[in-house]
Amino acid sequence: MSTRTIIRGGLVITAADEIHADVLIEDGRIAALAAHGSSAAGSWSADRTIDASDKYVIPGGVDAHTHMELPFGGTFASDTFETGTRAAAWGGTTTIVDFAVQSPGHALREGLDAWYAKADGKCAIDYAFHMILSDVNEHTLKEMDLLVEEGITSFKLFMAYPGVFYSDDGRILRAMQRSAANGGLIMMHAENGIAIDVLVEQALAAGRTDPRHHGEVRRALLEAEATHRAIQLARVAGAPLYVVHVSAEEAVAELAAARDMGLPVFGETCPQYLFLSTDNLAEPGFEGAKYVCSTPLRPEEHQAALWRGLRTNDLQVVSTDHCPFCFVGQKELGRGDFSKIPNGLPGVENRMDLLHQAVLDGHLTRRRWIEIACASPARMFGLYPKKGTIAPGADADVVIYDPHAEQTISAETHHMNVDYSAYEGRRITGRVETVLSRGELVVHERQFTGRAGHGVYTPRATSQYLGQ
Image 1 (cartoon, rainbow, N blue to C red):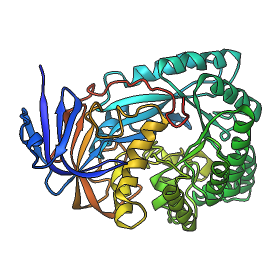
Image 2 (cartoon, helix red, strand yellow):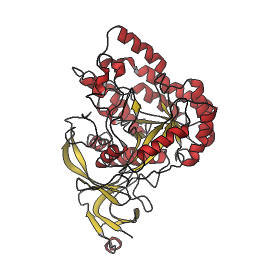
Image 3 (tube, rainbow, N blue to C red):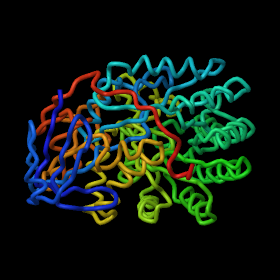
Image 4 (cartoon, rainbow, N blue to C red):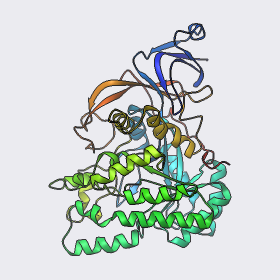
């Protein structure tokens, strides 16, 4: 049963172009683009026509860093694959790359199969997986090769969280050597967790237990030091490196220096580091707990360096690190001890809108917005040009975006399964109106029309920035 959809009259924005064009969708793929009003576009017929006059037509967002149902600190992230992917769709994101978790002492395969099972039949949009390595040994190193062949082409390691996810430099080096050989990409949580644990212990002993101390002990210098060390280990291994959730000016400088040397080193940041700060962590009462994540929010002056990094391409990707915990009953686990507050913020629904606001604020161009939110994450993680662009042959993951609509972000109206918004009360301009995933309407004129199970697992090629 062939289905055809035409999107007429919009401004099509990709990372490369802005063109007034009509878009023809056939059987879930982009079939053609033609100038609005041209004879080619006029000759098309379809089952459904969507009017995008005065709107943007953009690729669906690719959020390459989410944690649905993640176990952490004795609890679980509050969004399931069903609720989290539905919220993502509402926010104009049509693909997520989530993290399957290996438990220490267990096989990678066991962790991966558990995540396949969590997501299967639940997702409203397409999804893929990275693999968290928490136990690097002879067996898991061999498994890395098998996972790359299966389309799991990136592996996350942690220099933080001793006793949970932490890997020492020797294990990191061995994993990097393996990825250099098999074409995988190592993703690094770069914070010196051993030193941070000393500072946490000292702060708690001195009675500094409030959420704001979470940010103070996780020093920017310890993020920069770990970033530097990760880069040097990657150089020794001859491996590429992707540093996740970069939050500090000093860490950006380490990435920029490495890239200036021509090293295959990449970095992402997240909306929370661009729009929030330690002022939020210091909110009175226990409100600051809502903003506890790692890497932590930094003083506001770090934001300028992050925006600059996005403009100069020293940072290539904006992902959310979406990892929501409800304030009531979850964040509250850390009352009287900030180290027990589950780490993570909700944000999968807000990323595309916040970055559009950044365009209006003069931080980014429209094409750069699409590049860092759609095209670059798709290229970085082997999904391009199936995802991340609007071009013949690409999946018809398309968002009709109203750049003039005004909205106020609030937990009252968001669709994430969490009882607060990190951006509560923030007024922004721009809003998702209609979303297609592989040609199927999942949000239509601000009504959710999708379903659990529409989203399919999407194996990935190796990173397309590595010239393989």
